[in-house]
Image (tube, rainbow over all chains, first blue to last red; front, side, top):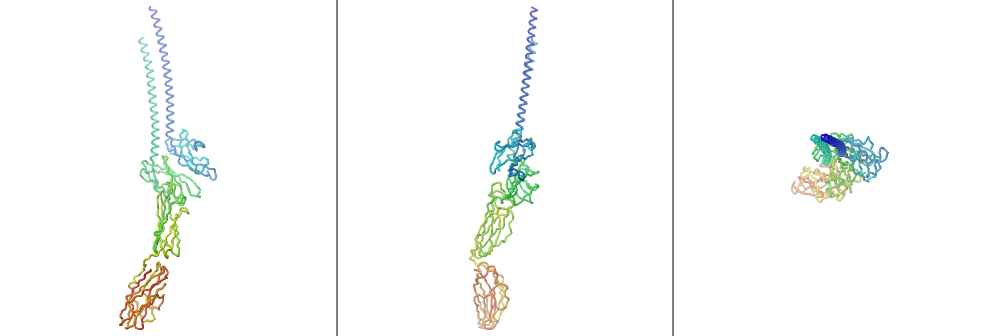
Length: 152
Length: 405
């Protein structure tokens, strides 16, 4: 009986140890996975929130649009566009679109960066006609779109 | 067995704590991120609201010392910072250009006026040109307007000659009314009228008597300015005056005209001097042929050139039953002196008075009408005095009245 008793005890200990080990492994795995998942979600959330917040903070003003018959002395027709950053963060203007993307002007990188309170001007060589109004959209690197309607 | 049951609880507790901490941390982080984003939204909203609250109006626009001089009034509730002024030369046939100029320390508080915008900017302004100006603010708002542009579009001009039936030798007032009827963003500056060009018929004259009116610095949309001149009209009845006025920096075709008539009123026009009603008694004469006597009376016909001369006085002769007589003479140029030989143009006939006794006074009047006198030319009026038969004729208490009819 004593011998039998002893063997029963060993079996329970082994089972208990196995259960404990298994539970620990499962628990650690679960915790590691959930921690990783939460971290990923947090990072995504932080990134998304920051991005959206930055987009919200972008505030451009299309200060002046001058339709020129000639750029330079006898150059082609063009449009002088002055964009002012009236927001609180720096903005990188990448594109100017006319007439809902039918004409796209890629802003040179050097001209596209506008610090808060500063302005930039670009001069795309685009032909225009008197009286024909068009939509003009200024697009930033973060994806903000500032649209106005201009008429020569 | 008791010991193993306790270990299991500890392990479970550890996992539970980890799960709770992770959850709480995630929720806290999420709330912080949400709060931060919310702050961004609020900040953007505030910027948009502030931008919408910015309100300012043009107070005045002038060209001073060859530079723009813009004044604005802040009619909103927020301070406004004018960052730049854009200038475009829109004068016809002049090279089109657009430039921007930074405005330093151009901050205007609510309810205040910011003056002299443009005075320190390196851009000149020509009063005869027209410009398109735009002021931009630090919040991205702008105000655009045109100025100095009566030369680009016709504006509403009216000319009135008041009265339009003016009596000869009287003054007439010319009023030129200029109204800025252009669209709301067109402001007129330095409005200077040309002196009206007037023509007349029938040899009439219409002479400017007043100084040129000063230029008007600023005329907003819907505003009206009035310029006034005073002219003197001289001419025959029903002669016509036609005047045309324009603006110095306006379109050549943008003019206003009006006409008026010179009329001769049906009223007597009398010029008189102090010598007329109580001239010095003429000297006595013994000349039967007659001599001139200066009554110091003169007259300038103003309207018709037709006058009635009345000369009355007392006649007497130093010899009983002898008499005295006088006639009326007139002429232009130098007034004949007392006692010279008869001269001038005789009007009517002589009036005679006979003294029943020596030096007996006989009142006598002579009324004559003279026509065809030149308007504006002064005439003298004297009498030719005579002694009848013998003795010395005396002429006293003479009054002279001249009436142009």
